[in-house]
Image 1 (tube, rainbow, N blue to C red):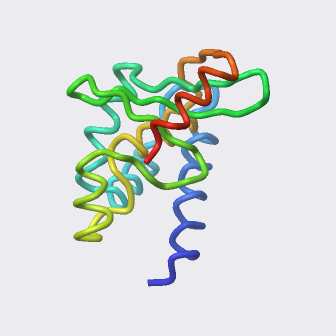
Image 2 (tube, helix red, strand yellow; image 1 turned 45 degrees about the vertical axis):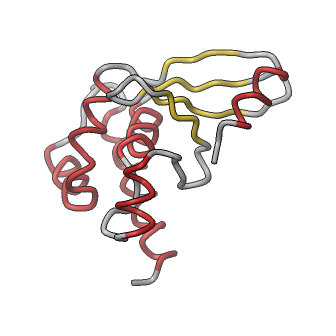
Length: 137
């Protein structure tokens, strides 16, 4: 399958999540059905992370930003919005090895939280941001 086509389709789906949830705080059944079709097994665990407010958008004075998602086991995962990568075991296995999922629950939770506008916000120093960026990968 054409990867750029799929990336565009996924981005349109997140844009639709944002559009339909604005002012309502929830998405339509049609959008939820589309999310379930595309993300299948990782959707419910990701929604659980969103519901439990496990996603934090972290920014620093120099303009760098990352997201931190606290996994269901309590492990923090640091993610960049523009790079579909997570250091969790599920990402390595399901996304990279088996290639049967597009993203892990942590990355999906980050994208959904951002689209829904429910990310916690945190500011850190530039030095703290460097430490967070070192955790990626």
